[in-house]
Length: 292
Image (cartoon, rainbow, N blue to C red; front, side):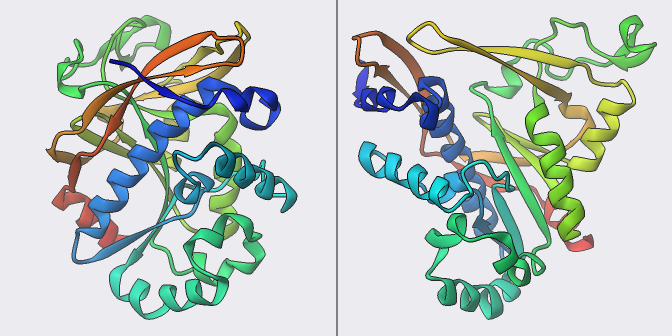
């Protein structure tokens, strides 16, 4: 049975919340971030801090959600691109980061503060993370574990057929340069961590950009449609998981929940999102973090 999410009021201000597709992907993004935060915090060595706007946004409260974005815009930060997570050594987090957070009013205030006020905190991070997610069971994707072979369209570089279905790590074109600039400004390496139903993969932003710029990965255009019929197009880069590294595996499965959004005209758009679940960070990732 589908459960109604009363988000139709958002259609009164579509510019701010960018339509129902944004809301669906937002909820999935929050899920993936929470799984990664819990996985990192369960290690003995590291702690994850939600740094982007999705990590501290209100949940299941339409008006509070809208006010949250109004406050972001009023602070002049509504369009600012930040990584979703900052990863710290546990001792650094407990000895220094927590004190800094207490001075600014807690984690919930991070999205509303300009980065000039947060440079000392950012400088303590081992890496920053951009989170992505996909509604797929990675191991059941048809081309999972298929070997690459030379592709004519890629100048005989190794790859897959255009219609291959396999796990990929996504970099949005609109995020590419803002993330690159953030990384350069703060001298903190950014990694992209992509969560699937039962596992997750990661790749360094620099490696992702190298693969794109050298013709290993082609752009893909995605079309998003709102219940009103309006469509928008975005360019993304789907980087083969083989170019990245295994990040985490699920130890407790998530639950797929059916929900729907109804706009003010009565148009219904059903969708599925993940709820719950638990992941464990792989030992090689902890080793990698220790070397950075």
